[in-house]
Image (tube, rainbow, N blue to C red; front, top):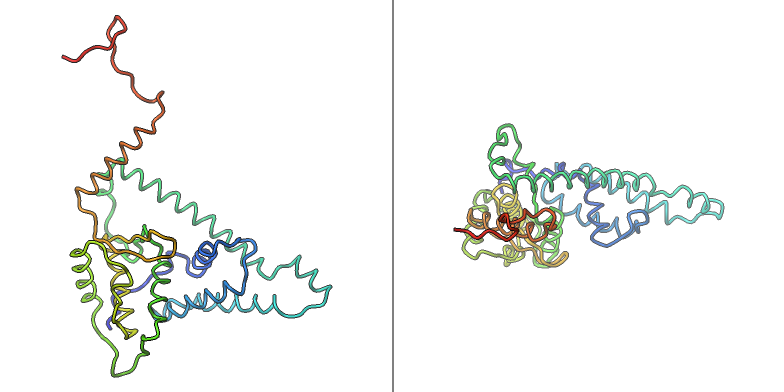
Length: 282
């Protein structure tokens, strides 16, 4: 499988910290007091999948996994009563929690800025064509509807299937990613809505599974294909790009909704005649 021209850039998510926040949010945990054992187990499951996708990106994740394991060990080791009191004051998770809080603050601010930018472009669509196009790494494009971690989680469920085989020199698949991209794009355009898991039905080779996953990621990030996850952590649906007419229609719907929500004081009054009656149109 040829992957030299496609890299999964997880730096846009600040890597392991973003994954930790995702796991805490997914499990509805308190960021100030999360269970280290279950978070460590979940983190290691994602790490196994990331190693399949690209070994070059997992360095920071391995360091974080080691940190989590060390914290877990410190919290489960038997301690004397005096040490337990000191441990409450100096929680082994405190440094990591502080990093998470700082990262969450900056991520929330960045998300707010992106939302404001999206609203601005909806009101002034011509400005989107005037943005500089050169010098931008396409791997920095973000997936809007579904988080990258949702896709990785869905991939993990596929890889865990019993029928998925380990690689061997005989069965290794070297199909180019571009081939998968063309096949999947044609299927999605034809069916309009395809379940993420459906792309992997009957697939047993890990190399083919990873190739299909990278192709889906390519379509979502660089070709305006869309993904939707109606239920929390449920099935993900892949859809083709919106047609130009559909985009205009959605913009009109948004504008109409904004007008309906506009306070009466901001609505321009109808022109009245000098006698105070509403002037009729000719």
